[in-house]
Amino acid sequence: MTRCAHFPAVAIPTIASRLERRFIVMSGDANLVSRLREQLPPGWELTQAGDLDAVGGFEEILQYRFLLLDLDDASGFDALDTLRKARVDMMLNIPIFCFGGARAVRGQARLARADRCFERDEIVARLGGFCEQFGWSG
Image (tube, rainbow, N blue to C red; front, side, top):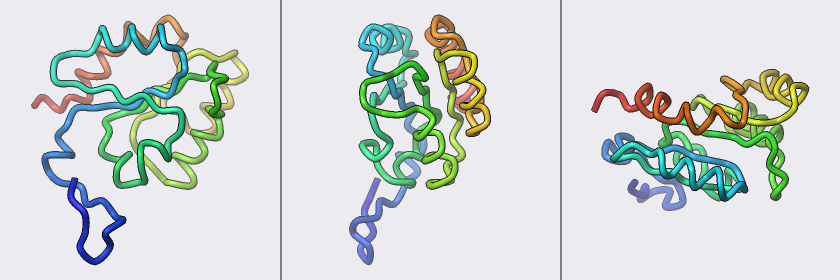
């Protein structure tokens, strides 16, 4: 990613940065994140974050292929607030897949425009399919 000369704080996406195969995981569950890393196909990168702002602004987050969001996490971020920030405040259209959470929380996540919600045990098994689907055959 390059910086704009007129607005140095604004990142300008490049073709190379857009083609990078990467996704965000928002979870404080070290065991789960480790299991996800073990399942990464070659050429993919996992970015773990506890806050969307830590990843960057709209331009940076849009460069990621998808986001995995832990609905059970209590390590400092509110998953439903994260969904609202992504969808309403930032108007991001990247896929957001939630996992875990009680049935009522998954319902709230769907109302906050999560793309899909999965059981906690499913997310690791589904990672390969997500990477294939969003790999853009390149």
